Amino acid sequence: RWLYFLVSLAGTAMVGTGLVMWTVKRRAKLPDPDKPYFGFRLVERLNIASIAGLSIAMAAFLWGNRLLPVPMAARGEWEVHWFFIVWAATLLHAVLRPAKRAWIEQLWAATALLALLPVLNLFTTDRPLWNSLAQGDWAFAGIELGLLALAALHAALAIRTARYQPKARPARRAVPARAVAGDAVGEGA
Image (cartoon, rainbow, N blue to C red; front, side, top):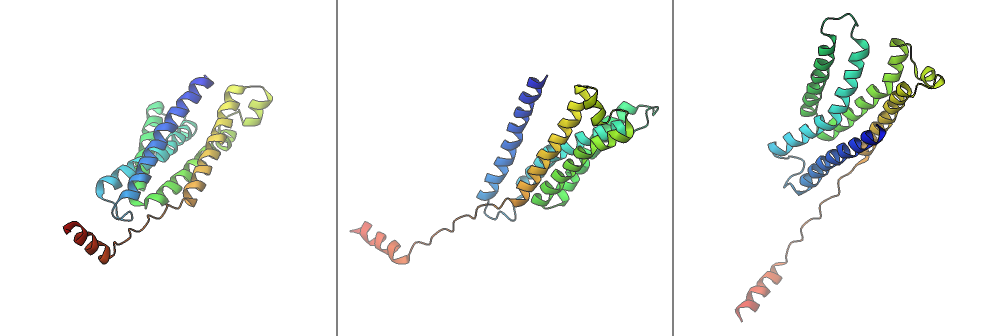
């Protein structure tokens, strides 16, 4: 199971980093990186919601699983609805905020939702992390430790994103008028 998990995580990271690298490199090539055209903005916002927003939506699904009343009619369906409602909200957030701010805010939101799930479990289940560890219940302990590790990963990504400064594009040097005129004279001789 762990091998499947790690391979799936690596594949997901490969796709996510590829999407981010594409937009970062493409932005640097835009005529005015501060005012990208509509298609670029759309792809950039979809990337934010697809990467950071998906983490928020998956965490929200787990929150819904713990907070929705057990006797609720169609409870399982509402967990799925909650996932998609939250995911749509992350897309709306990404559209309304500047791209870098949206990345940072969504990564911190995912950090908080993931890190607080074990705390929520303390109040909503009879299996807090320390009980699972003491009883050797590695299935539950592994999930909660995994949530904490994912929270730490999202926090590191949020910090790295906040610190990122794009490299300044080198200014094009103007060709001196004499050199252009000299080349024209030299070609005519």
